[in-house]
Image (cartoon, helix red, strand yellow):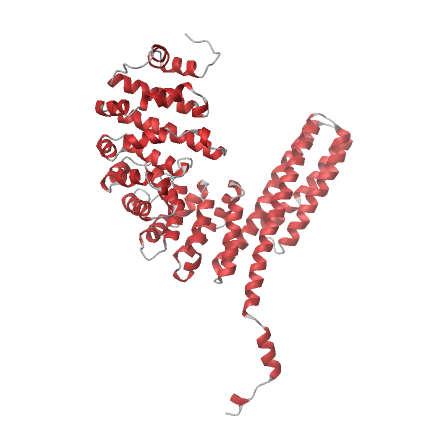
Length: 487
């Protein structure tokens, strides 16, 4: 009873001095220090790689005096990087230790060869081996440092620490595919998915998903996601009405990334085909309910990518009334950006390729939508990304119109809606299509298809002679004003 009321002021002061925030700040500092170390290794290694290229050129030209001087400079640079890595990696693994001493030894060997026996082949062989060893050392060092960030993702629970660690992953992922590969190799995909599956870490689900989308631009990340059952985790978040719309929008971003036609092995990813209908239902529901342009863009991009994956996709979209929702979105502000229009044009173009879907798209005003998209002009935009998006919109709208013209009545509707003059203008005026050959071919194909079903009586003689009558390649060459001779 007496002990309960006795206190020692010294002990109380020590306890009060140990702030809970102290460990958080230390972890946050640790994360930023690791990120800084990675940046140093990457920047220094890029500079050294450039110096290697110069040295190879000097050896090729047998400029031996310059080679000796430059070798000394390169040796110092490599040793400096190794020293920095030794400071930032206090406990390197055995692989790093084995590779670490190779560069110095072979640089000195190359220097001796170039000084005493100026023969090109031995020096090139040693430099080649050195370059490979140096690349391996840099790769192992980066992997070690990235693993430390992954460890923080696995262990931290504090919002500030987790947010900084995830932000570092995003920043590294934006630096290029090689860093995305290293992050995936070191368990970054698994760690981010674990965060998304953890209920009490909801505060960083959106940021984790953004990081996941950032690093999923390489096939290694796709394989890791497949191995970890990522699609099922994404579907759980997407289908949960309790999950915030912003989080579900980030899920759509991840799906759009992993289904990108630019990636390899997308079609083999387990879970995508099996859950295709559920994914499309919830993605389209997000398109229909959201008031945010970015979320609409991400959701429609995921749907557009999935239309390339399986023949049943368009039938599912028809069943869940996608044409009506997408066409109505084009008349609202939600899809006013060119990038959103690009996704809508992709979906419509792929849907009208299926006979069972074509009538639904047309009944929902698909022809009018495509003609509106065809009227987009790159002259109204300034940035390269917008101009490129405008070209894609024009091309896909023309392709969709061509496919709609499998029905004669649709060809007549296009003529009646004054679609032909715009197609001719895009063929004739390079500026209106930003000199895009893809748009030109799509518009020529659309004109010819329309004319085959609905004779264009009002077509001028020269347009008929140059755009309709010749072979497609001949018309293409005429419209591009090429000097190439053709028969």
